[in-house]
Length: 453
Image (cartoon, rainbow, N blue to C red; front, side):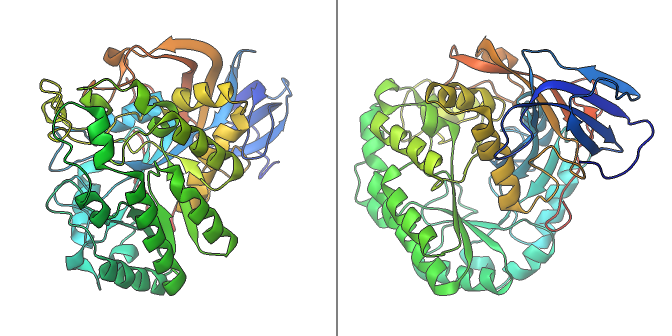
């Protein structure tokens, strides 16, 4: 594959092992890069040279940069929780070369073009990787989602239950229907946090340190009911909808049936639902709290089955940090703790460790964490290593082991339920548009807009 005859590429990589994209097995290749773009991919040919030549070791695999479409950066307004500088450094260290930032928990939330401009201004010059933005749908801005899409957000996200921040209230079922109609009219994309508020209000109070009690407060039935509502709206309006951070495997039959019927729905899950198990969460360990919650081992197995059969399309982080005090680590009270797990830097080794144990290969991981999220978001030059695509590249040592040390994490606060976990797969190098991403380099990430990436 060649797009031009470049006499001297800026960068040439000789990779005895590479996974170039979805559906591709490992293969030996030589990749040439010029002006930030892959210009040629051919069978391994060590005669090809360039301004810089990198020869990968036999223990390394070249991958396309990962795309994480679910990241809460929180800047501006709650930059003490996280920020573009720290979040994107963590992303790059984990092999993620593109993130899409959620419309909350920043202040202001990204609910109109002016708020998007504030967000972009806050991010300018700080990003080590490419960054795009989601908008939000709340009751007050329904009827005005079109201008937000036209301003460049990749789609809009809404909640059906309490979001955790008062400035981002949930939509009722009637509101969701109205949002779906508006999104369909603009050929947009509607992301939904799918937990049913009625089911949640009828569940036990989560107060105290008992993880079992917290788990009962966010029952799997709340996700199943909410997913049914989302699918009804999608069928009625024709809108393209996306279920974020699915934790309940009980919703998979509904989703599989809707896909078979041609409903325009996609689904993501997250590393914590694929790796962690409720049975292993100690009481009072609020660093494990997320909403919806980590469920039991049988549920985890069923999520993996959903990934394997394509019902679940992708794996993204839902990186949702806060200041340590908000995790209520001192009291262990699950009701008081902020719900969110920070895993932006760890997603690749987390998923690869468990995927390999279950018989999956790196091509599967590339599909779930690079190709599928890129395609979902309309990032036309991301998610594969091929001529004409951005030279966003990662070198992974898939057999090298690591022990998670919170002190080595680049996100702002070193709070993680994975401390001390032994994982397989170490990211050794990351390139963004053909340039190495290292802590000492000036951030060179671009700010992306829908239709331009």
